[in-house]
Image (cartoon, helix red, strand yellow):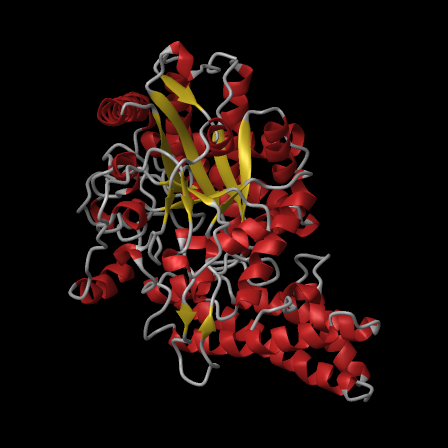
Length: 585
């Protein structure tokens, strides 16, 4: 393979894209504008295009060495027969929509729009053929195949993307992580070495007090790194401000208009984290909780490089904001295809200019070359200052490439091809680098995330406080029931408890608080959260009947069956996930 270089060959360091793939559970919960269309759009515009990108590189003798996270709840959805059948229909509909647009633009004599409509038809036809013929309807299986070939590494995540620092009980954190490991093994046939913490959010060990009233007594919590170590996880990823101090880059401010309003109110109270020693983000560190409060066994951490992050993440100043690229927001009615370009960062939707695909390739090459030069400059600077080669960890939401930034997969292709043929940079995965360069230094890092402000405020604020009160209520009940009845031999009780566990996990998804805070889909998020909470409470009433020796009605059992059909992920779930271990509070 062209990119198999070692540091002995004179490289200045290593590089890996780290892509985080996630969507909340949406099957059986609406389609448009909120619901399964989110999943179809991500699969059509991001997952399949990136698979095509990686396979193209492999066919050219290049191992992409991308580190890609796939959340367990996303893997469960992408392997569902319902998704596979529905996605085929979705792609056929998009091809038909493109054909209708071609006819419409031809009739109106708008040749530039017609050419782009023909491009959409070609695009969706290629995605259809890739999904059905090349990948046999199995996106997860194709990712697994590429991992087995050594082309990339797949890491896991918390089961439903629960915001771990704010979950109320260590048992709830363990259940999210443990089920994440179990689900990974089911889909990929091996244990994961790394994990993407939801929202890159971390919490050390300390005395925890619930942040909402009437939610239980405080107690000494385990650090997240301890729980990862218990489950065999070697490493996770954080934002640079947790390691180095200072302000978080922020991943979402440019992409969600409602977020800027609450950020402006919060920013007046923001204070930078202070770190009293140099901690460059170009090597792994072992993380331990401070002051000996936690155990000494932890997990290692890789850190987001702020320089390469900004030129991609920023919608206004980064590559995706280039005036020539396809605009994300403006869509053609009624089909939803996009025919306009960014035009400019402050240009209103009504003033967007028509997209010209022929203008794009040169801009993509320029952006990729600039990115590669930035990678090399950053690695050289680190080597010159610290006397050793380092690694640039470049984490992004996978959906940025293709869904938000239509040209993103081609950008990834250009960057990886250029780096693979550059003698100074080694493409690697995080696990490969971890094995070759185990951490030599232990550090304690503060609580925080990669969101604006670097803390929890996007997920915990006046608009979302009520959700946490319900989460803590349900977590407490789940731990109690698991501790008492995990070993029950009553099949009905077992089914009830397992489904209650699913409803808790779906409640804990960080997406609901994010969507509420950003106003991106507030009504849908509030409805979804409440639905899972109410279903838990309904099942709890039936469970209490069984516990007290009473026989539930036929209607009660039918209700359980209906909820199981609506929320069936993690078929092998077991209520013992939430049981207390010896010595736990």
